[in-house]
Amino acid sequence: MCGRYALGVRLAFIRHQLQRQGQQVDEVPDDDDVRETYNFAPGYYGAVYRADTPDQGGYNPAEAYDGGRHAAEHKMPEDEGKAQLTSGGIEDERVKYKLQSMKWGLVPFWTKRSPNYGSLMKTINCRDDSLAENKGMWTSMKKRKRCVVVCQGFYEWLKKGKEKIPHFIRRKDGDLMCFAGLWDCVKYDDSDEKLYTFTIITTSSNAYLSFIHDRMPVILEPGSPEMAAWLDPHRTTWTKELQSMLKPYQGELEAYPVNRDVGKVGNNSPDFIIPINSQENKKNIANFFANTQKKAKAEGPSSQPGKVVNEIEQLEKSLKFKSDLEPESQEISKDKEPMTESAGTKRGHPVDEAADVKPAKIPRTGDTPKSPTKRVASISPVKATIPGRKTRSATSNGSAAGRGKTADAKRAARGSQRITSFFKK
Image 1 (cartoon, one colour):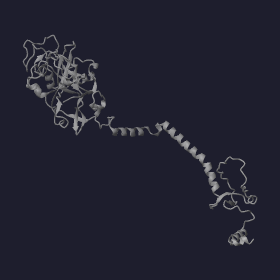
Image 2 (image 1 turned 180 degrees about the horizontal axis):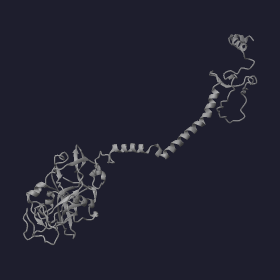
Image 3 (image 1 turned 30 degrees about the horizontal axis):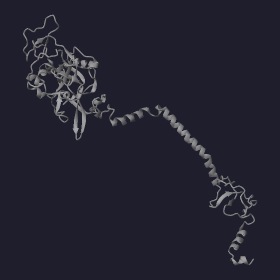
Image 4 (image 1 turned 180 degrees about the vertical axis):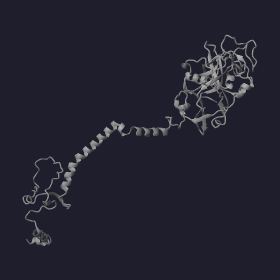
C-alpha cells in the first residue's frame, strides 16, 4: 500500500522535467491548485498527467480502436498540424496532454454524495490483480481513464518489533517518479461542481524493497513506449499488453530511513526526504556536535570581541581583589617575624618602658561599677614591634626589681619550703 508520498516541487519544475524526458505537456494548472508538500496524504490535491479527453474518457467513442483497429473514416486533415504515429503505429492527429489537479482517493462517477474518510481510504490504491478480470468498480476506468501520478518518491514504514521506522524510496538518478494510476470525474447530487479524483495502482515489491513491504506502486518510465501506450486515449479496451505493464519496477531505487515526524499528517519539512544520518539532516545529533565544533574553530577568539572584553574585565577584578588583600597580609607577616616561638607571648614592649609599668589595681568587693553598661570585648589590633627589643611575657607580671638569675633563685627557694615555715613568722 502506498499511503504517503512527496511532492515538494512546483508545477513549472514538473512540466520542465516531463518535457526534458520527451513527454508532451500542453496545459498546466495554477500552482495553488496542487498541494506542494513533502508529506502528501490522501485527500490532498496532487499533480496528475493524462491525455486531454472528455470526462467520460477515451479519445472519441465513435472513433476508438481496439488493439490497433482504427476507424477508416478517421483521418487527419492535411491543413491541420503535423501527423504523428501513435503507440499502435497508426497515423493520427495530435493528441494533447496536460497536468491536472486531482484529489487523491478515487470516487466513482456514479457516487451520489461525498464519501466519508474511511471510504476514501479504500480507494487510494488499486491492486494490479484486481484489474485482470472485467468486473468490479475499476472496469470503466481501466479502459478509458488511465493516468500517471507525478511525485518525487514515496514513504513506507519498516516494522521493527513494536516500532515503525519511516523510509523514503526514490529513483537512484533523482528524477521524478511516475506512478500508473486511474482517474474519474464525479458530480454529486447536491453540487454543480465536478470533482476529479485518482488512485495509484500497486503491484508486488521488487527484490530491493521486499524487506520493507510486500507491495509497491507501479512505476512507469517517462518517454518509454509503455508509458505512451498507457496514456494513449485511443486504447479503450483492456488488453493483456496493458495488464503486463503492471509489474515491479526494474530500474534502480534508493531507500533509506528518514525523520519520524513524517508519520504525522500535516507535518511538512524538506528534511523528510533526506536520510536521517546524512550530514544535510538537521535532526542528526552527530551533525549537531560537528557543526558546533566547526563553528567554534571558524570563529576563534578574535571573532568574539565581546567575549574577550568580558574575560579581561573579570581578570582585572580578580587582580584588584588580590591587591586589596596584599597590604594586610604583608603587615601580618611583618608582625609575626620578630615574635618568639613561645606559646605564651602576647605583645612586646620596649625594655626601657618595662620598669614604668604599674600593676593593675584589683577592685574591692564592695565597690560597684560606675556604669551598668557592659563593655563589648573587642579584638585589639596587632601592634607592630620594633625589631631587636625584648617582648613581655603574657604569663608573668614580675617587676623590674625581681628580674635576673638571683631573683629566680630566691623565688625557687621560697616555693620549695614547707607550709610550717609560714606560721613561724
